[in-house]
Length: 116
Length: 117
Image (tube, rainbow over all chains, first blue to last red; front, side):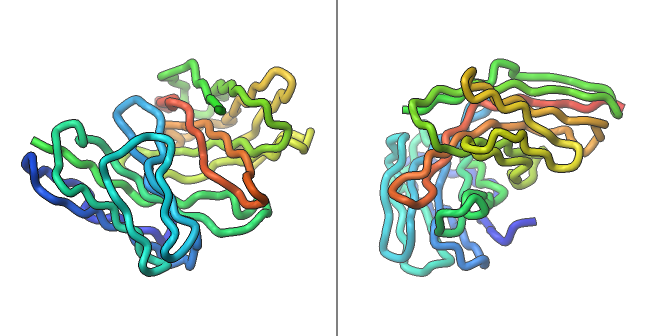
């Protein structure tokens, strides 16, 4: 099992609440990612980071924000949750570098978010 | 933009038999990576196999092998001697190296494989 952890695993929350999804990795990876995955659909990249203090938005527009203050920690925050945010959120990390080995992404178990 | 298409939403196979999952992709790049990732029920997604586009030889990892057809932009996964633990969602993914550093993954919609006893 990869050393990347997401909490909580499941979250049911009311509309308008602020939430933070946690993601931590102990592999020392520079690159970290957040993907959004709806049932039966592909994963869409919503945020990524190449290192501390580096964050960029991904392909899928998202109202969430991220921060990267420490290498091992990459939390995702929703300031005001809405039912449209209901989805599974997957965090991943990979090594920096140009070799094939560095292409492997290690995933957390995901957070399944339901906004009611 | 790159796209990845998996045309089989669901497949099933009997234990010990062989199954092939299909994937096609669209890109104008000549140098890239292709992957198959496995997502078991309620467990972490893991890398099954990786193919570098500039390598003509098909990648193999134990019971898993690929048929990479670069001109046809096809990348199928063959699972031999299927086991119950192979039951999972399988995602085909594409990565284009950017700026000298490996970049983001583009995923297909996945194929749910069920291995029956």
